[in-house]
Each structure stands twice: as C-alpha cells, then as structure tokens.
Length: 120
Image 1 (tube, helix red, strand yellow):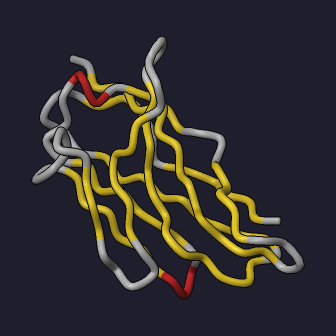
Image 2 (spheres, one colour):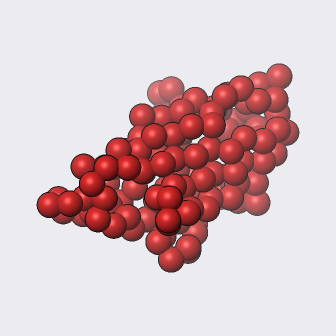
Image 3 (cartoon, one colour):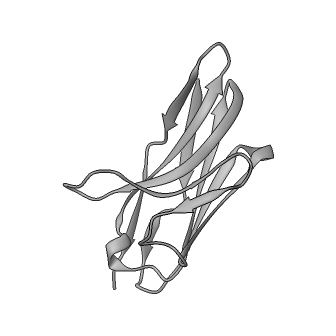
C-alpha cells in the first residue's frame, strides 16, 4: 500500500504564504498524477491543483497565479506553494496520489488532511 503524509498547514494572515508538502511512502511501484484538494465544512471536496509524473499541471481557476504545485519524483513528494492567501482559501487540504503499489492495481490514495486557516 501507499501512505501519504501531509505537512505545512497552519494559521496565516490574509496576503501571507504557506507551503504544503506531501510525502508518499510504502510499497510504491510507481506514482502517476499527484494533486491537492481542499474541503470546507458543508462543501464538496474540490481540486486545487494537480501534476503528472511528467510535470504537466492544472489549477482551479480560483488559485491560478497564486498557487504553484511541484513534485520531486526522487522523493515521491508533492508540494503546494500558496501565496497571496485569502480567507476563502481556508479549508482542510488533502493530498492525493494515483499510484501502483506492489501487487496492487492502479488506484487513488489520500492523505489525512492538513488544516489551512487564513484569518487576521
């Protein structure tokens, strides 16, 4: 199986920055796309940004120009640099990896989530 551990969340003032990290470990054969999602109370989980193993990216319109996703394939880690944060960015952020684990088919794995709160 594949385990994902997120870090880097916290409380930040509007206009500030945070960097989230998500490290994958376990019996990994290969990781395809990785991404960040977020969920606010009472709302559905939504895609924030995703990146393929080749480095192609896509972003939600609400974060374009402010957030940057990147990954280090050697470390099986994905990052989300969040700048110019707004109160509406407040949510629990989840990491997802589309991966193949040893003796397992391709499937999605999720992290436990990390809280990001943007408030003055």
